[in-house]
Amino acid sequence: MSQEVVHPLVQPAGFGRRLLAFLLDGILVSLIATGLALTVFGFDSLDDWQAFSAQQPTGTVSLLLNQGLPVLWTLLFWQLWQATPGKLLLDCRIVDARSLGKPSFGQFVLRYLGYLLSALPLGLGFLWILFDRQRQGWHDKLAKTRVILEDESLIPLEQQLS
Image 1 (spheres, rainbow, N blue to C red):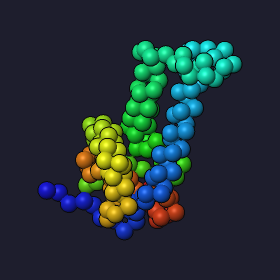
Image 2 (image 1 turned 90 degrees about the horizontal axis):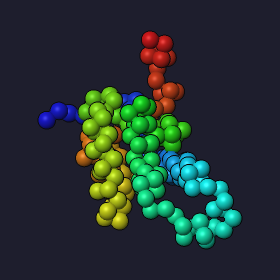
Image 3 (image 1 turned 135 degrees about the vertical axis):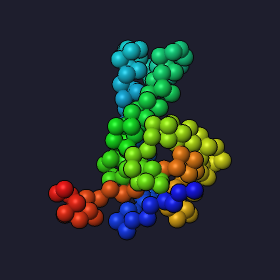
């Protein structure tokens, strides 16, 4: 079994920072999904909010907006930048727990599926971040990932210039 890399400049991102990033991402995805839904299903629906709620479509488009968009959004950002916009704003990055490098796409998918495991027992898998030494949730442990702070002020100038 390989050892995790321990580096004095690598700090795990804490629960509060990760929660705030999650909330920011949720708001952003909700705004995008709402905008797309209004574009697809019409702006006239806003005249009567109750009618809009009662007439929510239950087809393929609705499923894609409500379920598919968050999955695609998250996996795309993780694959391209190792973080979602909320994590990027809060200087967090997802790394492989062993190498501190970029996780594989398979790890990202497993991490996303691990969200379900973390959420099911009343969110205990997310709360685990509070008590874990490396600040890993169950989804991180399952995918062998960590969320670290990426603060440029902690990187020595020589490394920034190279």
